[in-house]
Length: 283
Ligand SMILES: Nc1ncnc2c1ncn2[C@@H]1O[C@H](COP(=O)(O)OP(=O)(O)OP(=O)(O)O)[C@@H](O)[C@H]1O
Image (cartoon, rainbow, N blue to C red):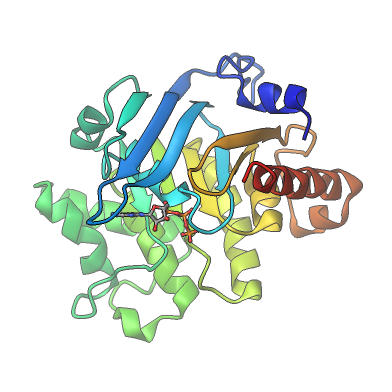
């Protein structure tokens, strides 16, 4: 990548984003020169280096980069599960800690992390119990969000009675049940077979369109990133830096799997691949 292209990709004051109605969308995550080093018994591990990024309301942003480049770490910084060593970040206009305490996000992990001794609805209700929601409200939310992920009728099943894809749908419903504006998803479909993954990609896009959530999504898969995203953030090998931000506005907002055969899709996939390659040349 040329220096100019790098500078363009890294520009922090990216042009204002537009929502589906063409209005300038509000920025809900702002990061400026975020760096993070993990202290270890040996050398410190420099996981992130000077990451600057704005994410607008309603965006679907994928973080893509080689294994160990800091994608999960960046997601965890947004979630206040890690603290940056330097730089600034606000989420929903708050510090990550204040946003976490205000339950400002839902988090979906790579593994569904369901309790085997609780049935589906009781798994979904557990965090709602912890935050003290009344029983009727918990039941209503469990019903609403299980329906949203296509699992009505499975309330009484136990996790081991469900396929991997269904378990992951339960964990998405659980993240939604807090009713956050922001959904953080760490390779939620990475462990699933390709057919199930395709299906869940389509379902996730429908859910995103219906709910207007802002999504930050970690993936290793170029086709998955292109299919889902409004923007793709390409990261370099460790320490993770943003090497390119690719806008997917060329693709329609309503998407089906046939899109993957179109020249526009293949062109963006090529740009992502080039971005990943350029990141490596920094080593
Ligand atoms: N708690 C920790 N202590 C020390 N090093 C850590 C810690 N957490 C992560 N790391 C290191 O920081 C780097 C970034 O890790 P991270 O999990 O964010 O990468 P990633 O891009 O999400 O990787 P993958 O795609 O393989 O999941 C890695 O080298 C990892 O080993």
